[in-house]
Amino acid sequence: MTTSTRGTKIPAVLVLEDGRTFRGRAYGAVGETFGEAVFSTGMTGYQETLTDPSYHRQVVVMTAPHVGNTGVNDEDDESQRIWVAGYVVRDPARTPSNWRAKRSLDEQLVAQGVVGISGIDTRALTRHLRERGAMRVGIFSGDALPYEGTMLAKVRQAPEMAGADLSAQVATKETYVVPAIGEKRFTVAAVDLGIKGMTPQRMAERGIEVHVLPATATAEDVYAVGPDGVFFSNGPGDPATADGPVAVMQEVLQRKTPLFGICFGNQILGRALGFGTFKLKYGHRGINQPVQDRTTGKVEVTAHNHGFAVDAPLDKVSDTPYGRAEVTHVCLNDNVVEGLHLLDQPAFSVQYHPEAAAGPHDAAYLFDRFVQLMEGQRA
Image (cartoon, rainbow, N blue to C red; front, side, top):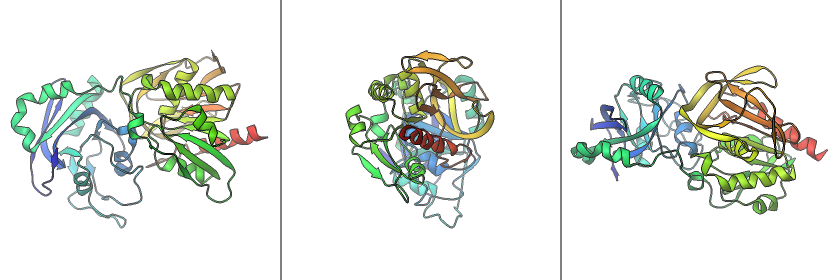
């Protein structure tokens, strides 16, 4: 339950599951909320972060000290709502200033019932999460504060992200179509595991008609649209729980239909090929992560939002039930697998977000690579 008291300095408390506590002021809605504490290193793009379905059930800590400077507009949302479970900032903007702004960030958080906290040392909190790892957290303000003795117990009762099956909670319930821009060249079936709005837009710009299907779609649903290619999107939760999407992807691989996956879709491909997945200590989130494309040697600055990764060998070709596979991309910070492809059929994936919302644009070529796979298959 949340209430709003915009403009006042209501005390708030953030409590981590290991007992570390930070005190600040309520920001956004007032009440209590729980989730997994993670940090985002982007200096901009907070509106796209908030509305990214991959952040479902996560409390996002912004490492940039000033947040909300450009307010909120009606064009940059990546879905129909804010998905973060809570929001943590150091110095929120007092007054937004941007020609596209329609309202302040605080007003948007209040309107959607998102409990947040401001005025805390987000640098110290980020360092703590880097050292100890992502963990459960609670934010408490207003009527929740008198019960301070129970806060830690409540945090520790909250569900963990490991083992969480969340994609169906954020995905579309009904299939919808994003038409091609200009001449239609291809049809793609996109399995929505938490898709961002810019992703089908990037495909539409390349002449692709995109049929966005629910996370629960079957192989029959996928092939009912007559696809030239199949796409698996980003999304929240533990890929170890995604048996349904894995089975659909295996059917796509058996039929050798051109396939592209990003983020959660990359983890699904890893599982479909027989690799394991594992939870990262604190994950990759933000718009400034360096990744090397091993097929070209190029280093790209990329957007990330993931707490799990594929456990695949970096330096050898692996035999799978669907042909030979290899790692194509790797994070230069920690050598985490950031991309896979099959050598014997048209299928590839990346762990990051090439749709460039909120940026950067280094990886837009991946959508062209998908188009090339479909052109090759058609030829």
